[in-house]
Amino acid sequence: MKMQFVRGVFFLCVALYASASLALAAPPERGKIATISVQKILGSSKSALEAQKVLQAEVDKFQAKFKVEEDALAAMKSELEKKGSVWSDEIRVEKEREYQKKLRDYGLKTEDAKLEIQQLEKKHMEPILKQLNDVIAEIGKKNGYSLILENTMKGLRTRTGLLYADEALDISDQAQKELDNRLKK
Image 1 (spheres, rainbow, N blue to C red):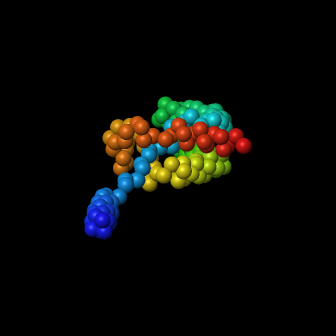
Image 2 (image 1 turned 135 degrees about the horizontal axis):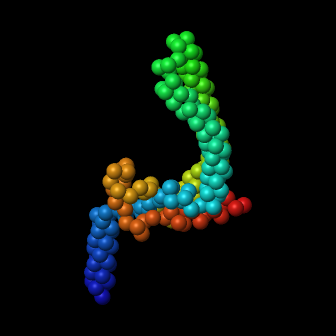
Image 3 (image 1 turned 180 degrees about the horizontal axis):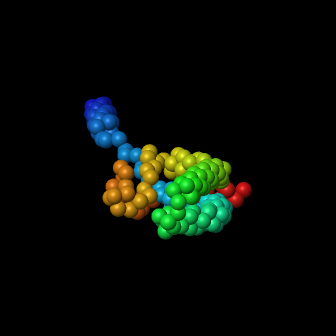
């Protein structure tokens, strides 16, 4: 009986050793990977859409304002081209100088408008993007993802790095819902 007991313990030790060595030899479990489309999220998030409406309204306002100046500049250029040959040198030089001055002023105004739009975009979109970054990090930690990759554009010409991802890996909808929930508060 002692012999059977010793033999049983021996086989148990061998079995434990074999299973332990198999566990050590097995490759580590692969990390979970997900993809996300920031473009899709910002295109469907209520807060992002509201911010984009504010920005678009400001852009439209500037475009309407500059349309008048663009038309005036186009009319001046047309007049210079049509009548420039019949004007005296003194009048033509004066008109060209006036046109160049208005063109420079227009360029400065459009640059100022671009800077104002960029600042407005930063003011409205930066908090949303910060929240989205936090949401993505929390989803990653909560669901045990090792990687969450950007997967916005379709087609090879527009992609950088990620050439294929299974649709099942996309967590954009989940992130967009969580972002909207956070930004409601």
